Image 1 (cartoon, rainbow, N blue to C red):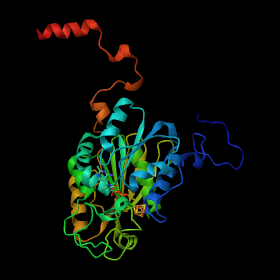
Image 2 (cartoon, rainbow, N blue to C red; image 1 turned 30 degrees about the vertical axis):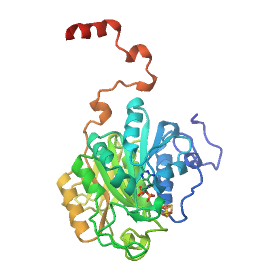
Image 3 (cartoon, rainbow, N blue to C red; image 1 turned 180 degrees about the vertical axis):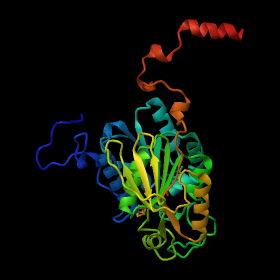
Length: 348
Ligand SMILES: Cc1ncc(C[n+]2csc(CCOP(=O)(O)OP(=O)(O)O)c2C)c(N)n1
Ligand code: SF4
């Protein structure tokens, strides 16, 4: 139950009266220093600062170290740790059964880019309302560090083995397929990742975030392009990302020309400051060109890369009733006998 009574003095609570600790999950069992742990911490902060009721959230994942991480945040939320690469279909079922849930899915670059690529492709096309996070370390951490499909051409495993296949850029792929919110961030960039997560939660369609998240145990050495030092040295933020939620009526002063304002589905505002004047985050072609150009230089463009507003999400497209299907009484989900008889008659 959410409390809204005034908190005792000295107790810090959010706008629905909950403390930060109420957004935490179990103690992590991942390696110390794993990027995935930092992402879980930012998710805790984002949901706390947005004042979202944990019971309204459903956490979904596939299989991998990354996919274990929903156990380490939002311990009061619903959760489903699904089969390898199959989180999108489980998430689709959950949201269609209960459109009032707020879905957050955590996947890995292996879970998404290899076994789950087919499901990922269709999720991006459908605009299901879900925050879809890829915790991208370029390897299969859980099965001891083999290359994943996002590993860069020429990058090396600790054993010296060289990757001779070109990578899949999940951001470019998502934009190409029709995703309506696409961002890339780095687990080590607390401020940027937190703002992006909050914007993603406010989006109302599929928000795809590829978070570079180094695997300290198997892919953090020289020769890797997903190590902490490589990503720090090759991170090219698109601009500063700030987020003002709809419930904070704050006027933001910004320099025209170098700041882009994007209004999110729920009325929150996203400000992309100091972005190049000719970069338009609502222009598909500009986002794809940026990704192509930066990848050719071996750098990572981070920030909110692309946002498409006002496209109906899957729940709206299907014209679902407002109430969750899961709790509708039988008489409202089953057509009456007369209607069925009429259909049968029309087929004779
Ligand atoms: C059907 C099936 N095939 C293969 C596996 C073995 N397996 C478990 S996790 C994993 C890849 C994990 O990599 P990623 O999604 O990148 O997550 P990470 O562990 O790096 O966070 C694989 C291949 C499995 N569990 N199930
Ligand atoms: S093996 Fe790698 S991905 Fe898995 S928990 Fe350890 S550091 Fe993280």
